[in-house]
Image (tube, rainbow, N blue to C red; front, side, top):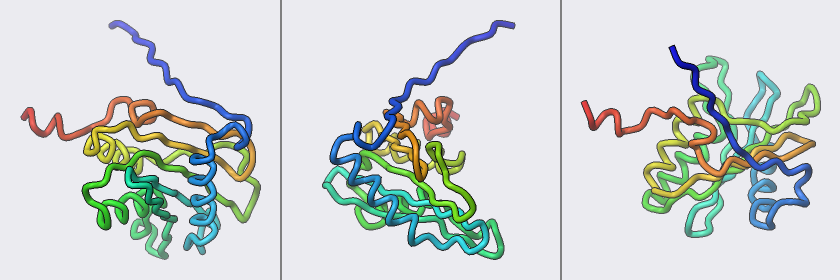
Length: 163
């Protein structure tokens, strides 16, 4: 058996002051989305803001439910709404953040596996790299230049079309 080593490369900004104005605006929209999340059970409010190629910014937030599997993550809420309203407009970037009512989040919030899969699908659909900007309530900002970084071995339609 042979072992392989895979590396991930992301940008790490120590503060939002290092970001472009466009990225700061996207993070601000994600914060607004997080503040409006419906999270009565976890008290962990996640917000996402999606930047479309036409300049539109779409917000999404986590939506919890007493029957836990019935809820939905902020990233998918934002992406599904963007795709429903602007089906032919590519997604260029998504900013993700969270607010905890229990403690201060000091590290970047990464999307769950299901959201990564959906994000990879939208990246492939658009033919553009999807930038992912991740931040906690405080601390550094982590930026992935594409979904290949966050989900390097994605399952996409290439597999379905082969078999």
